[in-house]
Image (cartoon, rainbow, N blue to C red; front, side, top):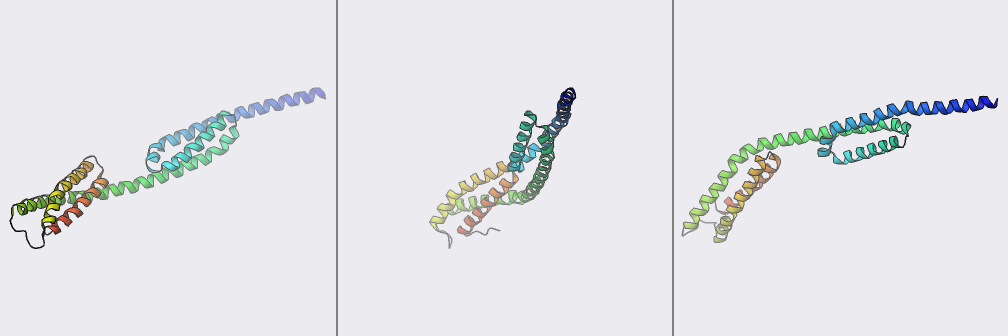
Length: 199
């Protein structure tokens, strides 16, 4: 009887070892699978949903830790949850990317008219300032102060326009349009102060 119980214990131990060994391969595959899934979406996630990426990477680190400790059951239990989180993160990143792409397309469309209109406004102000500076009598509504302000403002407008152009040249149309709109608003204000029509 004693021999039988010893044999039974040995058999049980062997079954446990085999059971663990049987779980190691699927656990290893589960970790590798999640790493591959994460690698495929990491760049977009980094750009559009960095907070979610951080959470997912923490979950993956915990999964790898369980694997290193030989807790294959925890790996096999945790992997589906992690894969769901990666999938949700991928969807969120794609949605944000679509929004960003739409905003960029809209900005590109807006840039065209602004890039034609704003330099003309700045040139018109420059011409007006030059003409008024030579004139002995300022037109009604135009003061020496508004002329002096417009004169110093022309360089500022040109500098701001240069920033907007540089942004568009580098493909950042969202920034370019924001800066161009600021130039346009300031130019319109300057034109009013010089008694000009802004369009």
